[in-house]
Image 1 (tube, rainbow, N blue to C red):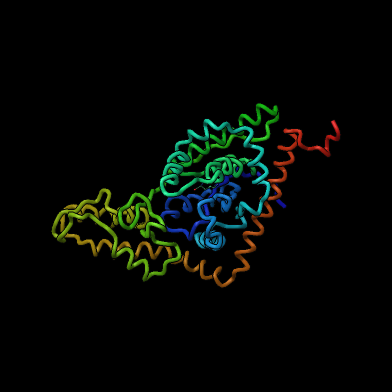
Image 2: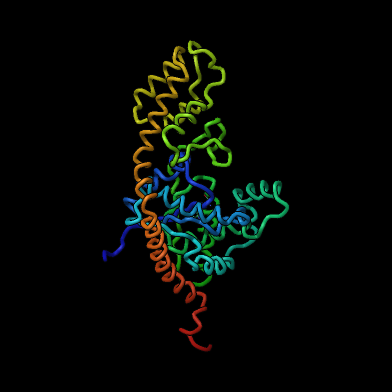
Length: 341
Ligand code: TRP
């Protein structure tokens, strides 16, 4: 077997449903490029589901959906590793041990966690500790394979900062350089608005195009998209900025010249929404066609999906145990190596 020399990436996603174009534009597209250069650990974070404990079956189904979506978009399980968090129990062990090195103050002040907690507290009677410590679990996710880079959206940046702090503190206080300090990788990605123009595309918001939508579903969804509300007649000049249909053209239509022409025409007046949408239907379906083809392949071969997951988890467990041997030694918890003190 070839010795692995690529730098490591870890990135993750919560298994809460199948993936949509927002995931594709905001993350998957970059991951596909990154897998060429880096050894990637693609994590399905099924510990981070404290908001779904009353529907674990949904989580279980979603784990498979996510794996299927990943295979469909072309994340190669031969190059990278598909990992289910719960199938690598070292995640739990490291979470417990790293909790010693994460003070309450910085966790409480983490702005991403704070705003998510505020929302939860308004909608639920109580917030589980498991939710409060999800950034800690995420720190363990990143440090377990000793990742060098973490590609994330800017909302996740506070978590990476905490990860660096915890790694640094662990190394300093034990006197052993167990963890490299991971760096965030912020690519300029498209934050895709919803079909309704809402800031975010989301399954629960019902404003998403799923990667597994068929051509007719895509057509219907695109034809019902929000555009410029003041563009009432075809002859009127229309607005392009902030217009979801043009945001999507920028994201998914490879014919940049035609997109530029359409924008100019739309702003001048005389170009109808229906025509712009019809072209968008074609662009999105062209993007999704090869994804659908691969999906059909794997839908018919569930064993290959399972193999991808099992193989990835096996690699992750090996790598995790290497790290944990060093962690336990640094903390002098390797009782039977050291013997009675
Ligand atoms: N919390 C991340 C999200 O909701 C998902 C995630 C879990 C993650 N573990 C991770 C992201 C580790 C980066 C690294 O998007």
